[in-house]
Image (cartoon, rainbow, N blue to C red; front, side):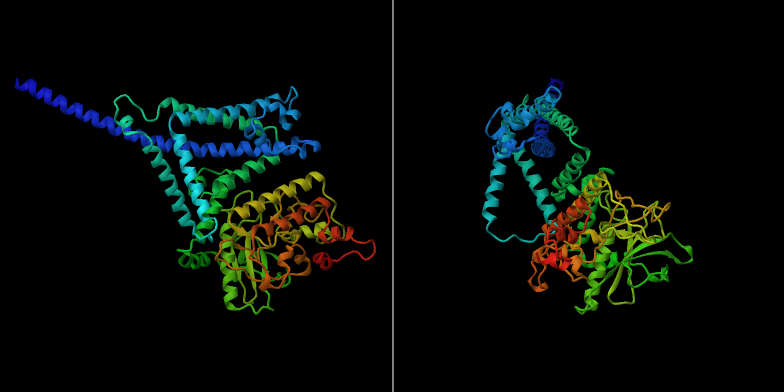
Length: 547
């Protein structure tokens, strides 16, 4: 009898233990449910962004002129107004037998989105997500009229991580306790999870189909630049993305991560001197006997053949402003930080710049230099030529012949390459401030140096004398500006220094717009302006600036 009682007692304890394990397993499943939905929503955001971006591009390419004034956004027509695909202007243009798969792909994506909504609604996740978004929207409205507080990157990361944790926790708590502890209840059915993952994979597949019909350069621009900026806008995503591999997005994440480490307010003081010490190169290590003070670039070699030749870009601080030791210190520190971002370890392939190895200071108070490796295959003796010189058809270095005109294809490639480079630099949270044809240079190949046009597909962006991080606490320093370089500046910046507004990204984009016009016409902006002036007299760069 005692044995039977003992067996019954042990069985009871085992049953209680099993039930407790089931309860905690159900609670754990509920937590997994929150994490699963949160993770899936992040994937869905990316795929929907890709779909929406493609649709906008297709709308611009597919609409006729008579549709422009009649049609609103295709997304609004097809979703917001519940109109059929046959009435959408894009469908009219893509209704041929060879193009029906495009409409099929778009319909499949929208069908998958409807199915995802059903799964989220059935599981109770949609109600939680909607209430979470309503609270965030109300919070944004309450703070819209108050001045924005400056936040460090670290605080943004903490806030993003907290938001993720709160959403996951709320999704878990949305599962009733009855369902959590019930023996045969599952808070997050496997069929729901599989359906959600399958539908997101379907959207990804159809996105690939849709993007395959776009020109390659346009597709790369959307996928590389647009997606990267969308993902990296969340600081929490940067670190894991930077470890994904060698893809473009990963490279840009590495660049952003390097910038963040240098820009942290809490660690700026101890980090910058150490970075400056590591990046500062002794000028005595180079043979600068052939370098001239007035040269913008110097191709020099190490003394005693200790290393390969390097390219030094010289930056002159304006003496008229009384450039002090303090100003020089700020400029040198900033140049050291820039050399970190442009180093081989951090620089993504979309950033058109030579791999920087450090910076140098000279005995001259007003002269600093950025030291970079000469890219493989380029001459170590022929001076680089600026895009400005090519636009003005000036004789090539060491010859009396004018540079030939590039083909239309070469101009498109150059424009797309420079657009990606500027966008990447902006993504790294830096202002260039001198992005114009004077700051774009080309190097000649080792074989046939100085003969014909250089390789226009491999420009090098220089002219970082005024560049600075875009953080609110950073200040601008004055640089050497000429009447020609002033032409490329936004009109609001062509005023005395004390009247200038704080620099913004839009001013870099303005300069880039002028650069695109120059590449298209293959003329300097001054000559383009002169062509639109009265036939007699023309207009100088100074006159164009005033217009």
